[in-house]
Amino acid sequence: MEGTNPVNKKLAAALSGGAVLVMALSGCSSDDGNKELDNWAKSLCGQIKPQLEKSVKAQQAIISTAADGNREEIKKVDSASFQASADAYTAIAAALEKAGPPPVDDGKKIQTDTVKELEKASKAYEDLKKQSDEMDAKDDSPEGVKKFSDDLKKIADELGKIQDEGADALQSLTEGEVGEAIGKQPDCKVESASPSAAN
Figure 1 (cartoon, rainbow, N blue to C red):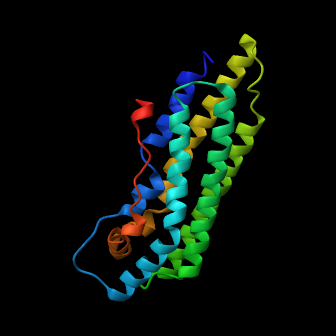
Figure 2 (tube, rainbow, N blue to C red; figure 1 turned 90 degrees about the vertical axis):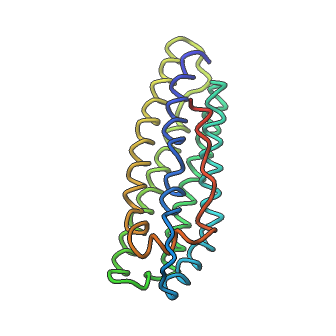
């Protein structure tokens, strides 16, 4: 519907900066390594690969829906995608707890802080899902269309903040020895959502 398309493209653009979680966990690799740490990273990445893929699939769904501007479809896809992202973050937090602290200095702090931030991000996505569920996609009056567009803009703005916070949340996992070990793992390298639909 006219009026919502530019805003939903903004929503798509917030996502198409890349799957923050995936890009963050892709890290950078090094030939030098700590075998114990490498084994820890391999175990973690093996557990979270399906969740990374779920997160990217959810983001791709929002991006691909941005082009048509159909309000009911936007609402349906956004709601499902935000729930999938929330579930993915929760599952990744659980996997990190199960994997235990990385065998490095401050490993326990890295684990605890990251789990806390992942759970915070999951709740933020749950809140976005609630907001999208509350949008009225059936009111075809000019006021109704504007209200939907305004609500969608608010969601897009909040999504941008969540993406930034998500990158910050994973910073301790992507720096130093831990980041190098994770960067070596193919299971933590999942193709991110394409930005083309948002251009």
